[in-house]
Length: 208
Image 1: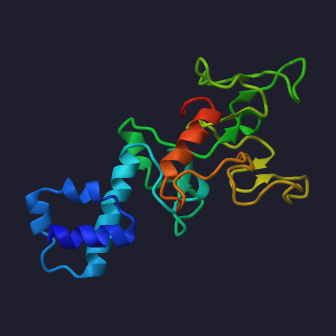
Image 2 (image 1 turned 90 degrees about the horizontal axis):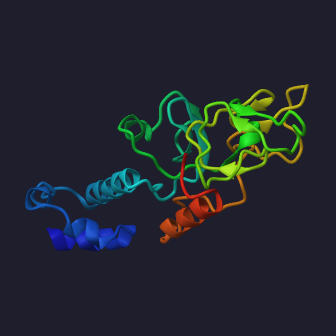
């Protein structure tokens, strides 16, 4: 049975190590299941393992907003704005994970500079800017669980003009138009952990 699981894991792109870590009882419980059921089981195990390790599951390339978790990457069939998401159990347990990069100046918690509100260094009202993280300039990119769309911006499509239309140059479908030009974490690339590492390095060494 384990050999069959290894063959299916290879075809699904699931690491063989995951199958080798399955206990005897877990493997025995797979007896009688069809190939598509086993493939779904292996994919679910990989997804759960990646999420608990702080990495984004393969194919979760859409940036969205969760009321409890903040900016998150979501699967294709999940609403981009929701009161709960698949990451909520990890957030409630005190864990953290790779999330879409956002910009300070478009957050409701950002306090602009009194002397240069457009581009001067401001502050975070929640005091969530960590040491060695990017300084709180309006266009500073960071991975932040506390980011929330500020006034004049909508949580999914970017800043809006006075008539309610999205302003030119703002990409729809992002998190308040704040997504930086970085590879999406957890994409279909088999080495998506490397993409995640790049995102962390460029945005200040981790989520805040």
